Amino acid sequence: MLNLRDAGSHFWDRLNPIQRKIFVVVAIAFLFVVPYLNEFGPTSFLNTPIASFKDALVYPIGMFVLMALGLNIVVGKSGLLDLGYVAFFAIGAYTGAILSTTTGLNMWEILPIGIALAMLSGFILGLPTLRLRGDYLAIVTLGFGEITRIVVLNSKFTGGTNGVPNIPPPPKVGPVVFNIMNPQNYYYLIVVMILLTIWMIRRLSVRRAGRAWEAIRQDEDVAMLMGVPTLKYKLWSFTIGAAVGGAAGVVFASKVMVIAPGMFDFQVSILILACVVFGGIGNIWGVVLGATLLAYIPERIRFLTDTRQLAFGLVLVIMMNFRPDGLLPRKKREKIKEKAKETK
Image (cartoon, rainbow, N blue to C red; front, side, top):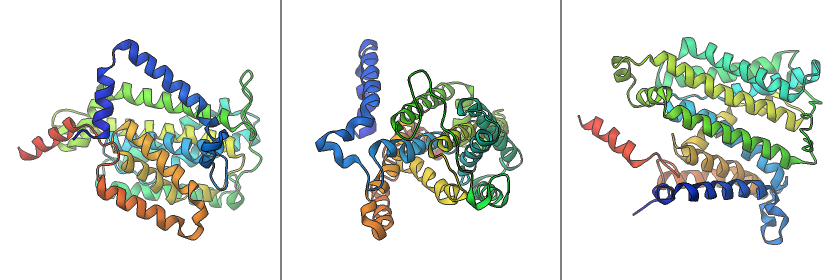
């Protein structure tokens, strides 16, 4: 039986170039009207108990999708288990918060700085630790995430437990104003960032870096024997993934206007990793779908109060039992290649 992922791939293959362009235009138009879907009577249920649908689209949905795509470069493309990804998100957020409140720089000027610092952190972390594998690498990255949280919790320049308040929003771009009264503009900004990230991942996947990541994920020892500089390309995946997390952090800080250490605990890393696994490790569209569902559903069922986490956990357990490879797993031909290698 043709599953959802195969059906989508078959549908795309049947389209001619003109039909594909029309489909893309329609998809972009749909993304443009998404923030206004809750304004109709039958769709008002999209609002969550504590926030409007527009606000939920920015955080957690938009941010989770963006961070899950960044983590998917590390986990899905390279096969490296990173349990401290929230650290890069925190580095970007605190960079944006501190610089915007002390130097007068705006978010657009801080964004490349936050990305650069996150990439530098990924490089510094990866250089000594990416020689490790499996559980050992997971423990080290977990430690890095906790160290980052403890540092910002106990440092004066980060505001300690109080965090950093009064973070200014980005200056307007032409007629587009960014403030709490216009959350849809933040949504459009995040959609652009998500599309750019997807474009980057797809371009890298068909080039030397993508082929190297695939080889490392399949069998690192064989990749080394074939002459692939594994440490170099693992550093690539770590730094590029960190860049996406840092960019998300800068935008997040400008949106919420106050940040604190409690926003960057271990639970966030686990949720982002769950988005990747639930959607389908290595599948871009699966990760987008998984992050959207795992970000929105807990917010929508907040009316359950004490039983919300239990209900959410049961849904995850049931879904992963029926779809152990995720909602949209990698293509079957990739799995066939893996099984063929195992039988040799």
